Length: 141
Image (cartoon, rainbow, N blue to C red; front, top):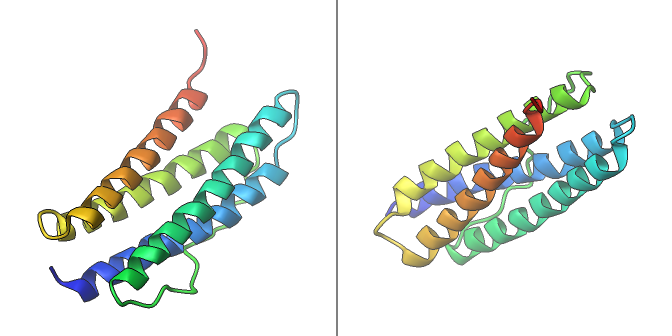
């Protein structure tokens, strides 16, 4: 296993989670309308979970002898604040994180069981977020 490459990819995932903290917190402030309260609650829960994920990833980085990044992943203010648009941006963010995590899985699979299981759990969590967002974007028929 190329530990330096794994640490670099873990740092990329960490930076994306840091961006998620800010992104979801911002989104929670920009929700208006009749369904505001449950949607705000969901975004704030996502923000808190992103921080938890960032801390967990940071622990993995330091366990491997690395240094957790202080950088933040990409944040783009699109000024699109309709709920559907915000959910589309959230979906793209979650899909990007799954792609990063799958890259990490490829690097550690069969090499480090603990890290492999950690990454698989993270992928499962992020995939559930994708499913939730996709369901929220569906129009009731």
